[in-house]
Image 1 (cartoon, rainbow, N blue to C red):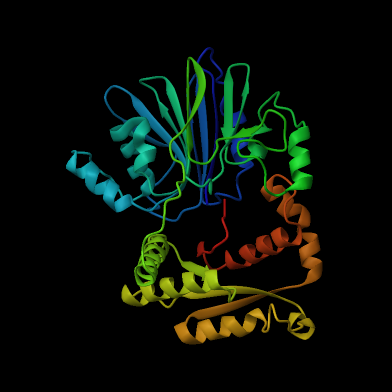
Image 2 (spheres, helix red, strand yellow):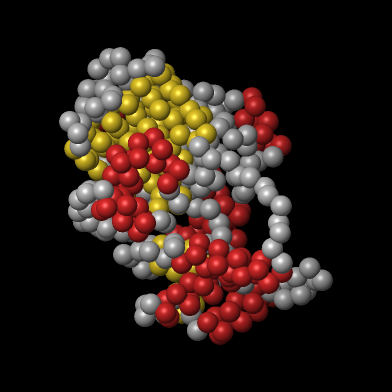
Length: 382
């Protein structure tokens, strides 16, 4: 999933050597276990931890592009689904592309479109781009806030990162619980008011927002808002549109240079994802799709039928795997393991969340990672 950190102060030299940015970056090692990279000058330091998915050679970060008497430097976490369309636009405008990573496409699209780049992106993303010519940092987060981006301001310094724990490594940033954040944690957790966290003075770039940091400070703007419109299509047209949107959304996420799979619980969401993913693999001549499900010790013995759930998940999982002929794997977790990973799951989230649901997801993903790097699922993985 990757992760990045950074700090910037345009009023004074804050280059405190590489040790600080390395310390901040190392808190994100589990987000990006494959590579790390750094960019440092007198006023800004950036660090990146990479999980290699696309273009191992040409997708290294921070990525630097020199253009029009300035350097543009990007740190990025996410995936851009309309990379092909953006690539064609860049080529038509005489941009030279060195690889096929979406990182390069995103950086050069920013050079071409400027701050308006966010209105041309289809994907999940959080990124920071340093423009040395304008002495300006651009931060942005995807439309629905799938990818995280936190920040704080201290003594004219903007400190930011993919996780809160990275920000706390910066000297003088204190771990102080916020009364509103605690109230929300207890009342509506793990949900919270957009833009705020459980910690005082630690904020997040809101979904569908971008921020510009320059000599005037930090200014944040909204670039997109979901709108409701009257539905006028008939039943047949509605089904046709829904099928197209699902197929386009799912298959656009199947771009990877490393092994991928889907999570299959037997529910409607995961079954739809698996169906379109399996069809895509067959159409493109790719290896048989691998699917993974999670189960618990003695769950088959303790399952009780009800009107709400007349069959166990395994019944529906078997229906789907037999119909689609996927290469299925069942990961079984025991209760003591769930309890043992409660703290690890909370640390991964940075705040208390959904207890054993979080620890089971963490254990499940840990086991899947032994064989696959990318998984499609209805759950939002930050």
